[in-house]
Length: 139
Image 1 (cartoon, rainbow, N blue to C red):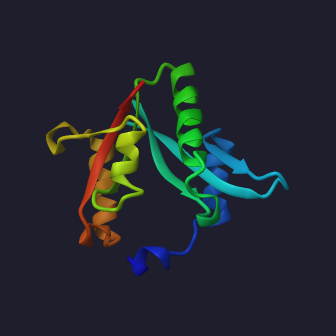
Image 2 (cartoon, rainbow, N blue to C red):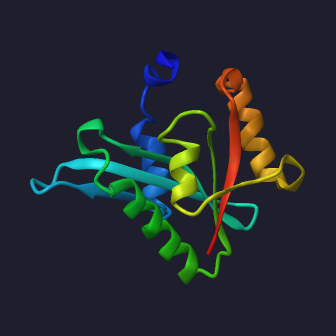
């Protein structure tokens, strides 16, 4: 999936929007350098995980799971019932990983208008060249 790997990172202005809303979390190493981040937004009454990114040299250390749990804690405090996300179904560090983190696949008939719009934007962006799904983690 080189097309995905070559995507430019989000601009600082876009990341700042999540930070200002209190919906961006960063994990750092011992030298205080960023190794991972998660950004989220309210969507359909849930907290939607827009992106989780872990540097490859920091993978498989529980950092992504820790960020997901931090987002879940934030949502729980706000009485938000679930986390949602969209992801690739056949990539081992996507849907299978999120299943291990407590997410379940949503049936297309149960998607709210926000998730439907996310999927529409993903299709326009060309992400539907590979199988994708919506997932939910009840809190």
